[in-house]
Image (spheres, rainbow, N blue to C red):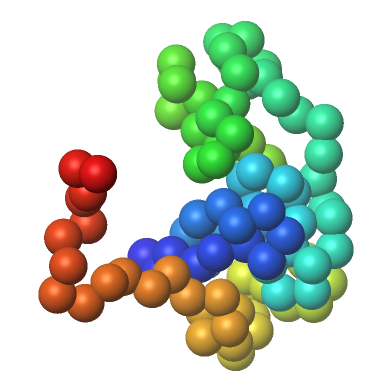
Length: 100
């Protein structure tokens, strides 16, 4: 699992997702492919605004959206290009947590 950063809203998500779970954009071409799904149909709780997960059942927002016309995420070359263009940089030599 490779994490990428959305170019539209800066959310961080798995590169295997067809759209950003926060804004519904394709990470490759930037086209808005999904919208208007604020609460989980299964349990009625609102999805997390960052990761797009339901806190009740763990379902993902926009998980039913299929591959984009540009080839993301089904085309390995397009997916690799997105992973190179939108990486999540981890600070080297620093802890991932901060107290201040």
